[in-house]
Length: 42
Image 1: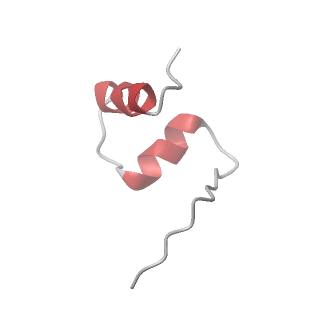
Image 2: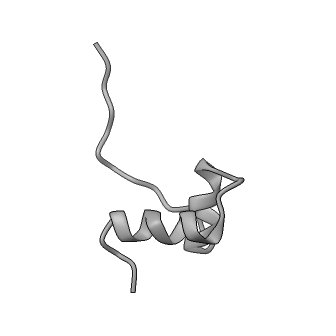
């Protein structure tokens, strides 16, 4: 059995820096794709 909280945490930094924590090698296109998938891209 595993438990995964739905609570999220953003560190006191930019959204870009927070995204790069999970995938440091991500390109700008990768970051925008992640934002679009989360429905928060503008």
